[in-house]
Amino acid sequence: MELRDLLVFGLSFVFIILWCRRCFVSGGNARKLPPGPPGWPLVGNLFQIMLQGRHFIFSIRDLRPKYGPIFTMQMGQRTLVIVTSPELIHEALIQKGTIFASRPPDSPIRLVFSVGKCAVNSAEYGPLWRTLRRNFVTELISPVRVKQCSWIRDWALENHMKRLQNEASEKGFVDVMDICRFTVCSILVYICFGAKIPDEWIKDIDSVTKDVMLITMPHLPDFLPILTPLFRKQMKRAKELRKTQMECMVPLIRKRRAFVEKRESPNEEMVSPVGAAYVDSLFSLQAPGRGHLGEEELVTVCSELFVAGIDTTTSVLQWIFYELVVNQDIQEKLYKEVVDCAGKDGFITEEQVDKMKYLHAIVKETLRVHSPAHFTLSHAATEETELGGYKIPTDVYVEFYLEWMTEDPSMWKDPSVFRPERFLDGDGVDVDVTGTKGVLKMLPFGAGRRTCPGLSLGLLHVNLMLARMVQAFKWVPVPSFPPDPAEAFAFTVVMKNPLKAALLGR
Ligand code: HEM
Image 1 (cartoon, rainbow, N blue to C red):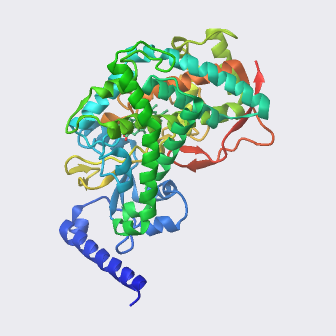
Image 2 (cartoon, rainbow, N blue to C red; image 1 turned 180 degrees about the vertical axis):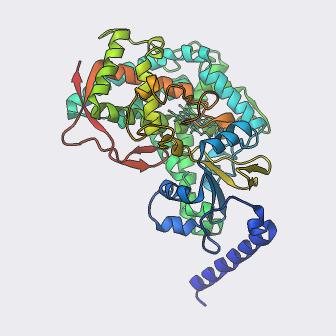
């Protein structure tokens, strides 16, 4: 027998054992999981989905009419329960909020970056998560902190406007996503480390963040752990990337720690006073089960801001500008609101942006039509429970598909039409995007215990950048790169062909 045959024989044998154990221990259907598409022996629906050669989301869209608002997919050894209706999402995330508030186990590659689930997004529901999340909220999004950091946004946006001008005059157009990414990343770097660092360093942080997001997306061995030995190269690459990530951020953390310990006054490099940077709060944090955070944990908790905050924010901005470029009447209406509020050349403050109702309607309509997240992150139940009349055991991945409700014609008139006015006097007026009050018709940030804690910060950045970019320029299509709404599914849902736009002075 050749080595390859031995391997195939060995793998098949282990599969059969695992499959039998699954059936006998759990009683197969006796678990009363929600129904779902019949799968193949051993691998369930995994290869059926892979062979379709398209993103998982399209399969979910096809399966929903057949299997209803809750169904099961057996992806290798991973059992996924997909929840798609607003009623069941509300029941799980709000009514049974504490039960559905945990996260399933991380894959081996994700564990490399989460250092054993030590971050707000990955921590299981419990004391560690509570401490990290409370600290996140106090240190990043409390009104005092937001006000304290407004100079960072002003400074970053001043540079942003210069970069727009330069890139437009050099190339004749700008790449909206690219240019916004850099600005959002630099704002988050300043908020996190309180330090002014060279542009190249910011680009390195952005680039390592992108790579981390890609490598931590699900891979075959996450569904069939038995194949892990065949994917050693990927694990090696993940460890190298982790090293690069550490090398990129540890020097910043060390410099900041020295600055904080000596209680120095702000200087050229450390621009924020002691206590004003997010990382300052992490130096003294006592994390349950971990004690003081070491450098590995500090890098993980800080990187979370970049992983969670850059792509989401910039993808929203890119889609907004797509809609403004193709709908010039909407752009003109927004321009008028901005000028009425702040003047043609006036400096736009965060307080003024707060009052721009049409701008908020545009942002909400973009989140409805082009939400960056079609799913929440995976959830797990803290105890066996029921949803929609089915059992939900603790070892399944519960996936909340948020997009269904925003496309539902019984909730939205002409759901595919981009019409911001619906949030001023139409079917969007009573909508609450947090799901806590009002009608539940869209949840771009999730809902309940694990809802996005960066909501207000992300929206502040989107709103402010939008207002200033529209006040300064008229955004028009580039004939050689016509705007194309085709979607690509990466970590967030982005434009397959990134938006290029030309700028005309106002
Ligand atoms: C427009 C921008 C954003 C959107 C659409 C968005 C959306 C989401 C969604 C859908 C979730 C998953 C909720 C769940 O699993 O139930 C989430 C979680 C999270 N987001 Fe955001 N997000 C945005 C911006 C941000 C920003 C700017 C930050 C940080 C600076 C951030 C930090 C987080 C964190 C830490 C979590 C995990 C929360 C937890 O597990 O307790 N997000 N976000």
